[in-house]
Length: 290
Image 1 (tube, rainbow, N blue to C red):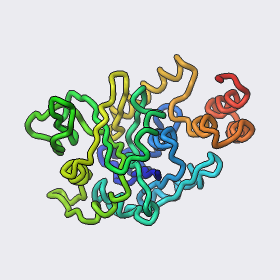
Image 2 (tube, rainbow, N blue to C red; image 1 turned 120 degrees about the horizontal axis):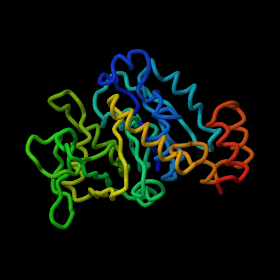
Image 3 (cartoon, rainbow, N blue to C red; image 1 turned 120 degrees about the vertical axis):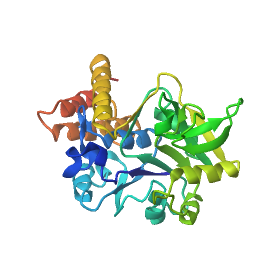
């Protein structure tokens, strides 16, 4: 399976902060926002990842992430000229996806808890569609999946005006290789976008949509507003301080996955001297948190 991080868009809800920098490069406690969605894909065992950005932001992402070889993975970079919907990511990444299954995660989504992590490896070989569902108090602000009494999906609704359940669909999706063909058949919605909800509905109509309801104890942050970014940063600060372990640390995930050796991890830490993040990597390589 291959992975896509959709990190385009203008970030208008965060203006003026995002006037000169992508929101996915903003700090969420001790690391850039984009580290967290990348870490989710890496925890699922995905090593080939494409980052879709705006033209002006692409050099900054390349400077931050390089080609991924230092982490034992492969990063490629693609451009979304204008934000034309989440589903456009599959068209942009058609040559990258080829005939592979693919996971897509939005570049401003942060997941943490028992429902995520390495449990996601269970979904990487499915030749269907798998979406997440998360209980929220404000379903009208999200795409929602309506379920029957047996917890089977019935309908996908984009920002429902009438209550149809409180199961919002976060920005993490797993698809079979036919998702590109489905995306290319889509017509723009009333707001001029290729809607991911339309793709999910098509899989549902085919009886090929699976829904994974994230359990209690799982946290999900949509980093599209200043308030949500602040909440996410405070959440991560508290967890890391109490546990002594980092969330969304790409180098640690690569090391624990066996993609880089301890000496390589140590070198990555030594490359950023004076940084608490770098010191953490060195301590990891020396076995302090084994």
